[in-house]
Amino acid sequence: MVYIFLADGFEEMEALAPVDILRRAGVKAFTVGVGSEYITGAHGITVKTDLTVDSIVLNDELEMIVLPGGMPGTTNLEANPDVLAAVDFCADNNRYIAAICAAPSILGHKGLLSGRYAACFPGYEKELNGALLSARYVAVDGKYITAKGAGCSLEFGLKLVELLCSRDKAEKLESSLQCKK
Image (cartoon, one colour):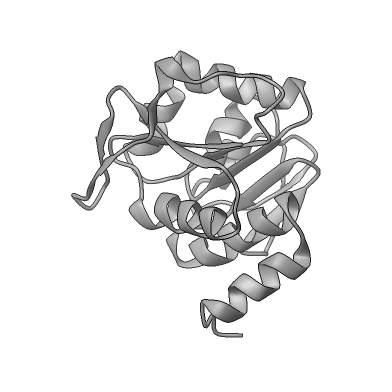
């Protein structure tokens, strides 16, 4: 099971492309509204989420959380204690934590990226506190997956499928989506 957290001001592509790709792969992926079940993205797209943050369950079924970027979406995620509890749960229980664009800053502020390879939206590097900056669009270091921004949302989603399912499944999805190589 995967939770994709959405807070007002989230970057729509960074959230919805991975949700779509994960669901195509057969992964139980749930959008989680922070503050409401209706969340409006940075570009005015309103999404009705599957769950709200106060109804999530942190247990053995949780394999991964995804933190989309966008502003003020990232700061709204970081301000929510339930989101931070989910980050802590995943870090403490060796579960995947994926963050894209500005959202890796949340992990950086918690010290989770220190000594790890990470990527983020240009200008947020100083927020990654001790991370080894990666030139890759999507960086994987252990259970941490970080990415640069909206333009690599498909690559980000496909990497999540590769990690949760298999490389073969990710490659088949990439081909069926007609991704440019």
